[in-house]
Image (cartoon, rainbow, N blue to C red):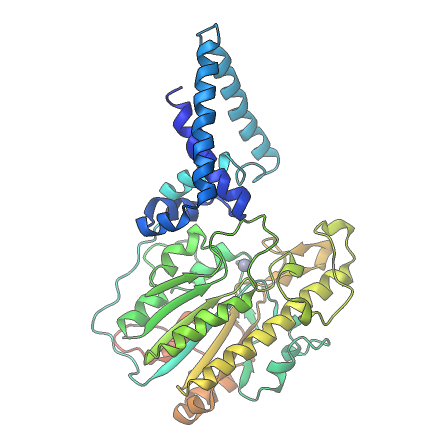
Length: 435
Ligand SMILES: [Zn+2]
């Protein structure tokens, strides 16, 4: 009873948030619960929540009273019930992974173990002696999600998915980018560090943000995705990390749209740091596509109306997917407007973490072995001021765009872009150096 009561109480406290606020219990939430500041805790206490706690205490008193009335005192019946529920968990998880793991009460236990299991990479320390461009410069790295290169009108796709990008003279598309890593958790650690797509060894890696911080650049991560264990510690090397929708349930239908990244981005650009690397991590074109864009963007119809892929028409799935690309085009245009308003030489690099399978070999979505998901979209936009100051970089950028690269080029191109000195890197892998 002494064990049961506090566990029951704590699990019920979680359940309140899960059912009223639509949040999911993950290791990030456990992280937040364990490491949060007292002032935030006070902000979370509401009158209904306090009433809920009181009710819980009353319920526990009743349970305790009933328990005392039970004539037998052996633990065998409870032991049997516990054993049965624990073994059902493993049995069901084996048949259909994640069936119970993300649901209460298992999610709390799972979240706590994940929290204490967090992987921490060994990061190479960046020499204090490195130097870089001292001029003011805004670099925006937009990390896309599941956007494949061949569905961009910019790359010759027949449907008008990127009307803004096509009209913009300062946009260069890189249509031959390759990654064998077809899911976010595996792809991002290699994009954001010097680790190659060819390696499985992620020890002794250098975070791109560490290099930028050391060079006097302000770094901020503004994300619309939960940080996964595999790249959280890399993201944490930013000066600031801002998640716009961090506690929303993975089962929620009300996830934030990527346009909510714009306001915090605009605010941080306007705080006018002389040199900054702003990383915007989108939800992009992740399944379920209909949740990724507002209705006003719906160019292609009919669209999907169910999540059960086998019952859907392939053309409808592709229409929905293409609408998410139209939305991306619109958002990139909005980001460009913000950059143009602030008068600092600016450059935007968009790279999707991987592509998406859209019916090839009868398959859909990603994280499977299929070529269709290995060619992520990438393009670069530069401001007129940037072109005036760095004509050679723009020339190289425009000459290299048909080359075949892996996503490894992002790290080297960013280093080359700010002309890092004092740190060895391979500038033949940079899109800003002429081949
Ligand atoms: Zn992804």
